[in-house]
Image (tube, rainbow, N blue to C red; front, top):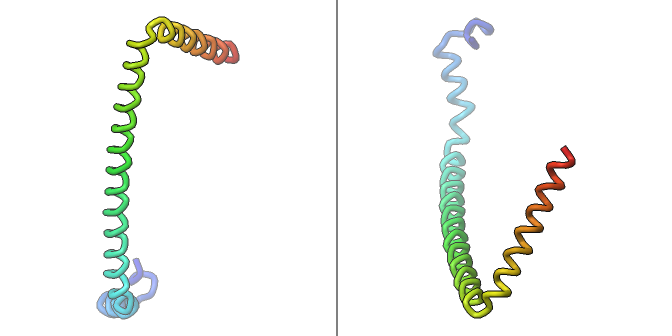
Length: 97
């Protein structure tokens, strides 16, 4: 396309493009290394966050199970109230539409 518009030879265009691109090659490698390192760190952070979330969820489940065993009446009341509130919330959303 460039050749058609400018009338230059293909080799001349390729040489000009290579001259324009070549000064940036060292920076390209540095940027690539930087982004590769950043992506690796982000992956590690996500993995650590996931592991922490799994651990917190497991701890919360254990606490809830222990509470339910120690206070079965209160646990049933809490679940009933939560279900009632969730049902009312869904009903209100459906009503608005």
